[in-house]
Every structure is written in structure tokens, then in C-alpha cells.
Image (cartoon, rainbow, N blue to C red; front, side, top):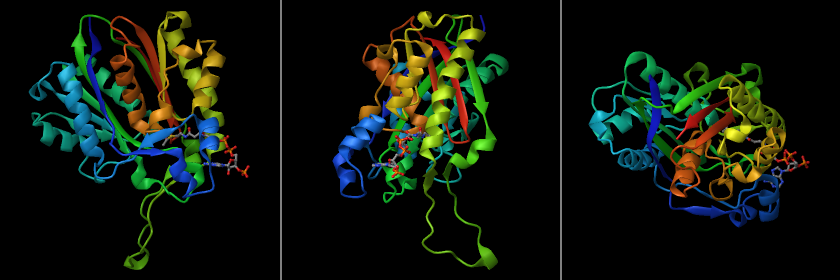
Length: 322
Ligand code: ACO
């Protein structure tokens, strides 16, 4: 059978924990508002670790869990919107630090859906082109682009990395991945870049920041998440009762609760860790998968779905047998 499966996972977050009270001194907000409107209690914000540092630690743990030497890796994909540099990519930094061979390594930008996109690319390259072991990572230091004077965004975003080693297998693992993107909605959520230089003048003090229409993204997400899960179920001829767990992008607990209700899926089987990590964009799904495995919520042989949405707007999901 031409299949790919999860060989191992790992994750890493910065040591620095920031609770909701901290934001009360920075913007007009409250611990109570943040908890009830988002489900977030605290998050990890990096002080001195860049995206590649978080990704490296997560990758080491995933390789260890997969009992895989870096020399065996023949494909490296990093999903991130907050790389250390515009170029080179975080994937090349991983390749150098892990001492991997001369193999394809590249970053992709699909915002919070990035890890699911990376999974689809790795899965198809392995099934079609003979790659045998892929290291895929979702890693972000969103705090670099967070405006800590904007209460609409600063309480939400945080830093983390999650990694996975996917390997060729004779048994089913990644069963189906579905991806979507709707460019007409790109204006709802943006991380600005540096402005063009007019007449070669330097524009001082212009920093790029995340800007978001939270209300419209919320509305979109509550439809997109259950809809992509339904598509996955239909295309794999699976009943929702056959899923042991759903691991959704941790953007807002209320979005996840609404998805569970819409799918008539037990809310206790919707994995949640947003209370301790906030929204870590492309790191969110692999961080949650790794934590679910570490805590014994996701056991060998179980079938689960993961789903994410984010800037673009992009969304997608996968059904996987662990
Ligand atoms: N503290 C207090 N009040 C706040 C805060 C805050 N931190 N943030 C917003 N408010 C206020 C707003 O200003 C607004 O006030 P107003 O009525 O006087 O204008 C009020 O709360 C209600 O605003 P809403 O936007 O309707 O609040 P809502 O309950 O929808 O919660 C939130 C806002 C948490 C942003 C929610 O809309 C949300 O989670 N949206 C989805 C965001 C998301 O998932 N982004 C993911 C994309 S990830 C990626 O790709 C990087």
C-alpha cells in the first residue's frame, strides 16, 4: 500500500508565560473578557528564541520520537509567516542545524492553515515522488508582528512550534487532506509588510503589524471548520462517530464549541489547549497533536481529524489514522 503515516511528533514553546492580567496594564481589557470571549488564560511569548530556535527544539523531539536520524530525512517543509528572515527560509536553517543532507527544503505561507498545507504537500510528494521521510514543522513567533497597543489582536497571538516526521508506510495514516483558499477575503486578516520606498527615501519607524477584522473572521471560521470536516467525512466515507478526536486550530474556544455543536460531535472530544497557548498560527495544530499524544488522548490506531483556518483566507483539514 502506498501510504504515509506519523512516525513521531514534538513541540516546543518559549519559557516566558504571559497571563491575561499583564494585558490589563497595556490596553483596555480584562482577564474576564479575554477568558470568556476567547478561552485564553495565558500564552508563551518569546524573549530570546526566534522561530528557527523554536522549530529546532520541536524537530529534535519529533526526530527522537520517530527514532529517526536527521540523515534519513529527505524532505523538509516549514509552515510559517514569521520566519527569522524573509530569506533564507526556516527550512534551510533547520537543514543546517540538524545537519540534514542535500534534500528539498522550503517554507510555505498559508498562515494558520500552513501545517495542513505542509502535510498535503509532503504526503503527495512521498506518495508520488518516492520521498521516504519528511520533516514538517509549523513554527511562529507572532509576537514579532503583534501590536501591543491593539486590544483586538494582542491578547490572542503567541509563539510556539510543532513538528512531525511523516514516513512511507504499508498501513493507512494520512488518509485524506482537503485544502481551500478564498482570496476575495484577503482583507479580513493581514500582516503588513514594509512599505514601498517612494523616490528611494527611507521610511522610518514603520513596523509591520497584524491587522484583523475579528468579527468577520469569527463568522467565517464557524462555517469553514465544520464544513471542511464534513467534506473529509464524505470523501473518506466516514461517519463522525468513527472519529476519536478532532484537533482544530486553536484560535478561539467559542469557534471550536460552535463547530462541535454544528457537527453534533461530543465537545469533550474536541481537543483544547488554547487556554495555555493562545493562537500560535501554523504551530497551533502540530502543537495540539503532539500534546494530545503526550497526554494519551491520541493513541496508536485512533482516527482523528485536524482542521485549520487563517489569513488568505485559507482553510483545510485532514483525516489521519495514528
Ligand atoms: N478586551 C476588551 N474588549 C475587546 C477586546 C479586548 N481584548 N478586543 C475587542 N474588544 C471589544 C471590541 O472593541 C468591541 O467593542 P465595541 O463593541 O465597543 O466596538 C467588542 O469587544 C466586541 O467586539 P467583537 O469583535 O464583536 O468581539 P468578539 O466577541 O467577536 O471577540 C475576537 C473578538 C476574540 C477577536 C473574535 O472575533 C475572534 O476570535 N475572531 C476570530 C479571530 C481569529 O480566529 N483569527 C484567526 C486567524 S489566525 C491567523 O491566520 C493568524
